[in-house]
Length: 147
Image 1 (cartoon, rainbow, N blue to C red):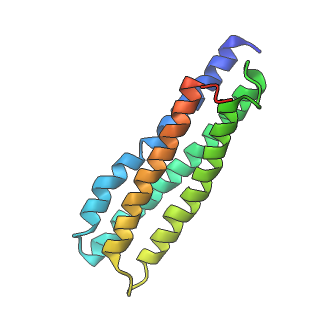
Image 2: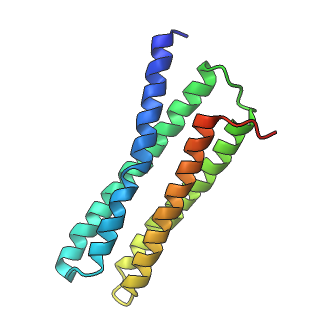
């Protein structure tokens, strides 16, 4: 494969990794502010949170697609230990993202819900997801031979 095309795929992979992690750090101050806003303003903050989650989700899709292309055209076989571990963490984080954010945000709309408890869970979910993404980032950059 042309090294320029491969380089472009690497670039897109890195950009999608940044977009899959970076916006989550914006959630922390939004969650903090959401604790003390009026009900009318609440929806605006929830819309921002939903947009951030959507951006992270789509960036994750781009990350997967470019990663597959890098495996197809790159020098590493798919059975390399760091690739298998990255895929395992990826599957875990995908399930986690779907359940950890979407379900929690749906509960927020319930008028009887304990909003502080939901916001605590959303904050913890964000940090846990960031941790999973950083583990994947470490695996992709360091490429450790685990077995």
